[in-house]
Length: 154
Image 1 (cartoon, rainbow, N blue to C red):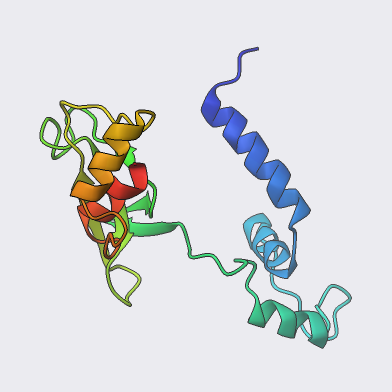
Image 2: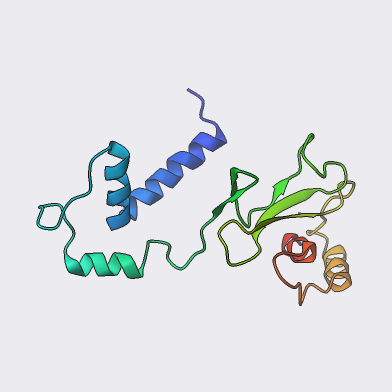
């Protein structure tokens, strides 16, 4: 049997998530099975201490959510991807990334960056130094700008 990269990533994610099971994981699993939530006094109802801990730390470990809705579909946020043939911007830019651009959950913006006709030569010290000085990568600006993502790639 042959395993694709996507299947391998899914297996690794599941293995990592099994170690971090907490109150919310149990709640979501119960909903998924179609069971009703436990009521106060039931054997599987969480005690007050664990409930407060779950309210304070929702299992995110201080990280931002990595998915958002853009154009009525779920997209990964802050993860650059190549612009494929048929996508908007193909032939004009090399990469795209979805970023949060405001306090609302649905404030998502697409940032396209990179020259499609050139490749990144980050292993060449002179080219890297020249690019980073030319684009002012010491102060790249906000994540909503192409310069930030270009500098991050270099």
